[in-house]
Amino acid sequence: MKESWTMLLMYALGLIMIFVLTFHLLLVSPLTGRTFAEALSYNYVLHNLTYYQIIFGILLYAATIHGLNGLRIVLIEWLHPGRFQWIINAVIVVLMAMLLALGTYTLIAL
Amino acid sequence: MNKRFKSGLLTSLNPTRYNLERWSYTLHRITGVILALFLIAHIFEIYHVTLGIAGWDQTMAELSNLGVIELIGMWIIAGSALYHGANGLRLILNEVFGLLLGKPRLPEYPYSPLSLGRNQKIAIYVITLIVVALWIWAGLYLLAGLGIVRW
Amino acid sequence: MKIRILRNDGSKQWWQEYSEEPHKGATVLDVLLNIRETQDHTLAFRHSCQMGSCGSCGMVINGKPSLACQTRITELKSETIRIEPLYSYPVIKDLVVDLNDFVNKHRSVKPYIIRKNPQELEEAPMEFRVTSRENMNFIQYDYCIMCGLCVAACPTVALDPQFTGPQALAQAYRYIADPRDEGFQERQPELDTSHGVWRCHFAGSCSFVCPKGVDPAKAIQLLKREILKRKFVRGPRAGAPASVLVQPEKPISNPPKAPPLDFKMGVNQNE
Image (cartoon, rainbow over all chains, first blue to last red; front, side, top):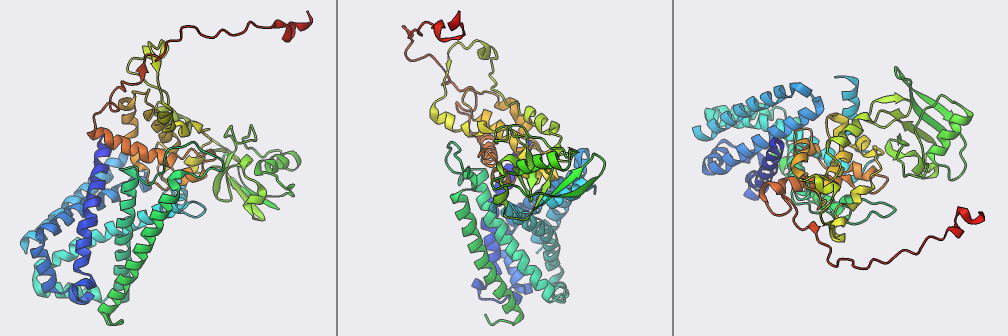
């Protein structure tokens, strides 16, 4: 029961990320008329993170949940932990919470 | 790290002697792990924006000290993102909507499974074409950032 | 021609080499039988029908899981043939693998028709109707001979021994897609776990190696769609299919009578 909701979340976040991540990549792409080094300059990054704050917020949450859940699946399959599976789940949840806290702080503090 | 685990990992990551989809599976998994690890590093990297222009420039300078390794790394990550996204869209069509799998029919000798049939092959070739084209484009762009190629 | 076989006596395993000159058109099973007859009678392998319908002689030939009786030597186009026991199974001896786990997983998905009222299976009050179009949705998965090649090819089974496996999942879909079946709720706890249907990532190798064209990969993708669909759609397919139990349209009033048995044609002719 639980697993199908998790996978539904994976599919939904994956679909969302196809649009949001395309936007994120376009911002550092040559279509903006900048070279790669210019696209990483402080002013440009700061402007993007504040101006498109909501889009980057969506991307942060979608990517972290999708990515770390994917990592959890890979770890469960590669390590086949059996009854110690809760350890992997716990590590992933803690890591997810840390990354989301750090990312949210970055987006809000600017 | 028992013997079964090692042989299982080798069996699962060895796509040779199987079908085209097995290569997709292997690449999807490898790019997924690359992207997940990159994501963790990327969130820590972007955090340095909050340290102000001095902190950001110092971080960028430390990263660009890596030189060619950083460039190849960025290129691999760009390719991973492109492939994982495009192939993920195909998998969503397959798994959630049941598309590209062919119509139900009786199996006839010589058996050619419909789920690995023409629709699926075309989808994989289109994905490969788009991803390779965009990947080369991204590579030239990364080289232009170093001034090696004039954009 | 060299035949390299991964031998196993239960405690250690080693590669043993035989040289054999098979006749044109020989299958790998013919070669193995010949080796056992003329060279090494300790070589163990399973086989029965020699025509690809019993599914006993599954083994890994040159890196690809296949039925030995369906693989011709000339098709392999190599001077050395490597034969291993099926991947991802515990080996008992030489090429014989332990299929207990495989069969138990097949059992765990309840591969039979389940009715909410089990009495209906014993004494059907009316006709169970399956149209030919509905039949086409699952008839393909009925051709499974349980040779276990798909499980040997599956990359997820190689990693995760608890994974239900392509054969069992395809059989689960075969019964869920059946309009006579009402057992979705009973099967879901077996399928919808962290080692169930969602650990399939559509590598498609199961369909690629299947000797009967069963296409388990397709069944598993459709099973995923079915599980997701039943979360949101509560139609007639989600519960009891109402249209299955029907009265026969034309009650047969005068069934044609069979001709009386002619015992003169039978065994009693001479008496």
